[in-house]
Image (cartoon, rainbow, N blue to C red; front, side, top):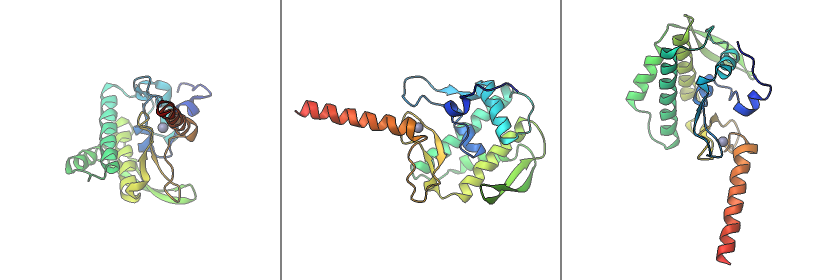
Length: 201
Ligand SMILES: [Zn+2]
C-alpha cells in the first residue's frame, strides 16, 4: 500500500463515516468551482486509504473492469441522492440496478459495534472488487432504509457536491466543512451585498 502525504486526510476529507458516502465523495469537486472534477478512484493513494479505512477484501488497485463498475455504482448512488434531495421517489430502475450490485457476491451479515451503538453490516464472502461493490451497495441500502431522507444531504455550496449524513439534532448541518464551503459562501454573500449596496448607492 502506498503511503499518504501527512495532510491527505484533511485535504481529501477522508472519511464521512460511511463506506457508500466515501465512494460517492471520491468524485472530488473543487469547492471554489475553479478546477474540473478530480476522480480520486484514479489516485492510488486515495484508493489505498479507502481500502485501509474499511478493511476492504482486496489486495491491489482496481483493474479497468472494476473501475468501470465502481464508477457506475457511484453514478447510481449520486442519482438516487439527487432524487432524495429533490423529493422525488427512488425509481424501480434504480432499485433494480442497486439490487444488481448487491448480488455481485454472496454476503454474510454481521453485527458490528459503531460509535456507541450496534449495526448490521453485510460482508462479502468472496474477496475482490465485486465484493467491494456488493459491500458498498449494502451500506447504501442500509442508509436508505435506516436514515430519514432529510438527513441525507449534499453540501449547500453548489460547486461542492460533497455528500454527508446530517447527524445534528436540529438538521442544521449545511456544509461539508464550515471552514471550507461555509466560509466561502459567507464571504461571497458579503461581497455580493457590498457590491449591491455600492451600485444601489
Ligand atoms: Zn462543501
